Length: 268
Ligand SMILES: Nc1ncnc2c1ncn2[C@@H]1O[C@H](COP(=O)(O)OP(=O)(O)OP(=O)(O)O)[C@@H](O)[C@H]1O
Ligand SMILES: [Mg+2]
Image 1 (cartoon, rainbow, N blue to C red):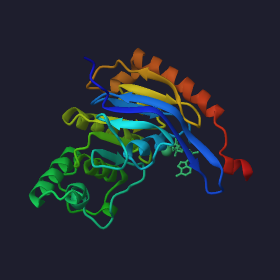
Image 2 (image 1 turned 135 degrees about the vertical axis):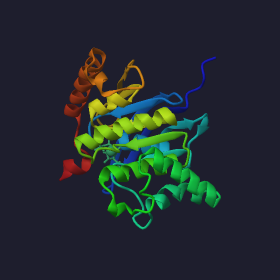
Image 3 (image 1 turned 180 degrees about the horizontal axis):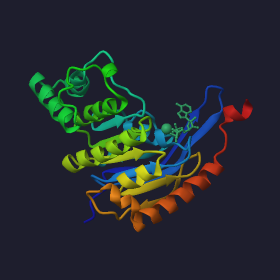
Image 4 (image 1 turned 90 degrees about the horizontal axis):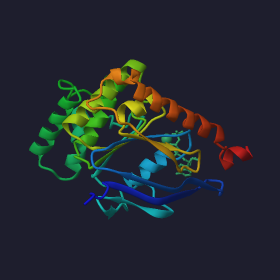
């Protein structure tokens, strides 16, 4: 028997009401199945609904129609089974690295000892052992994102939702973080939805790249990456990688040209 998908979005439509009253269709009848421990990269032009898609899975946005199921259960609200990492640094500035990573387990009423152990484990996995007592303002951007990843993992989520998590980092740190993420994934495999504008990043990380159309976002196409794991940067020069890159780039460019202004901008 084929196992049911870990995550299923079925015919999901989202329409927002903008402040000036106009309806903004953000996502249109989007369906997506994600297998357990699969990494699906999501690309598409700005405003096509990528963040909205993640927020739907996080339970922060309700679909206007259609449904989202995680392990067969309808997603109706946020929960610790879904961890989110954003582009902007979202650490609590008044908490130390340790405090930030412990936050989730503490919120769930786990015993002190457990919180400390879990935090130490993930701080070590992201390579920040020794920085437990540092505050976010004392860290670099890459370090802060590593804390954000550790914080998300400390809840032992079923699904990790990553919204351009490395978008604000310099190119070198970014590649380092991609390798680190795959390394962590090898140790603690999670189902990951990874939104990015960087096509190389999408291909390097993903088992599949899900290309969205211009707003309202639908599935344009998906590219399956039959690239071996564990992945090393050398694959970026392989013929299979380059062929997939050409395909994805062509689709994203075409969709970007199709992007229509939002009603608010039309009026301005
Ligand atoms: N809370 C909201 N209220 C009204 N409109 C919204 C809301 N959130 C998103 N939108 C609109 O929905 C559309 C999709 O937005 P979303 O943030 O999901 O795009 P995106 O693909 O993540 O874009 P980017 O690549 O620029 O981050 C946009 O037109 C946006 O203005
Ligand atoms: Mg976004």
